[in-house]
Amino acid sequence: MFELELKRLPLPSALGTPESAAFEEMVGVVNGIVLGLWENDDFVQTAEQALAGFREEQYHERILVVAVEAGAIVGRLEAVFPLEEDSETATLLVDVAPALRGRGIGSALLAHGEELVAEGGRRIVSTYTEHPIRTLQGADRLVFAPAGHAGLPADAPEVRFALERGYRLGQIERSSELQLPLPPEREAGLTMRHEGYRLISWWGSAPEGLLEPFAAIKARMATDIPQSAIAVDAEEWTGERVRSQERELAARGEPLLVTAAVREADSEIAAYTELAVPADGTKAEQYDTLVARAHRGHRLGTAVKLRNLQELRRLAPHITRILTWNADENDPMLAINRAFGFRPHALTGHWQKTID
Image (tube, rainbow, N blue to C red; front, side, top):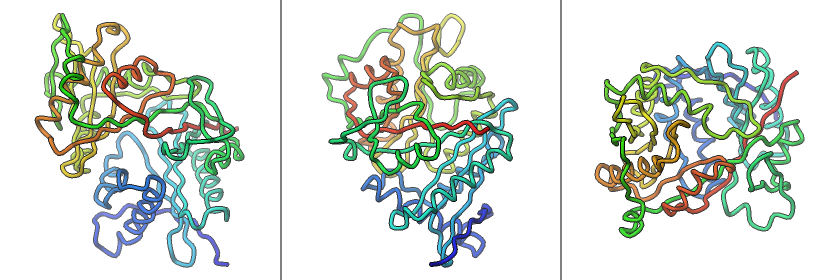
């Protein structure tokens, strides 16, 4: 039996060098775990993409720790700390090579992560479990969040792992998949007039004249969507933070395609939706979709999503699938998705624990 060692993994300045070998090995291990879970490469990423996600450090601190056994990386911990002044939360992501689970590697990584959270002055730890649709059939017992209708299989190893370590299920997100293109009759049924608002789209970079209004509505994303029984820190968004996100996603090769509904009377952004669109592959991922509370009831959510799909068809016709995530209790947005033709894809459990 080899001794397990936990090591903090520094970020390399460049890839393809001796300095970057451990980072690239870690990315390969995580990709193997992802392939095993999803049975496809939807969430596989290159080392370049992974590194780009760590480069913008002004708004989040990310710490990487790897579990090493017999000289090989067998697991990973990523600890994410929002850097707003009053933040109380941190997120821990733990992955272990499937063949080596059940030997305490995940427990060691999680315990180390909780120590980092405490040292960082945070009280609340978040973590996630992911459950592809094929794994949800025939479960005898389910674990439910305080709100919503879906449940996670109580016998799933990752569910047991979270419960045994004092985490509670605060929210379930539904992942849904849409096949493109939309049938013409479905698109026609979703088309509508939107009096008093104009729709504006951009890809990769927000127009200067909308930069600060866009930042203002993005700041509401953390508080205006259903949060069920999870603690969420408020986020401060400025034009520079929008540009930081744009730089990160451009470096990852997945710039955002955005459509916003702008109120004509005062140029306030009332609603927006985002798609991360890769240059290759067939899958795009839905990021934010939000209708500000004061503007709900005008079907703006449907309007911006439809226009964004029309722009996607024009600018990136190679995309044939979209994945989106919504809180299980977010009935209005789930209803919009069903109208577009989204079908169930997976469930994600959002677990939290308060550190004494």
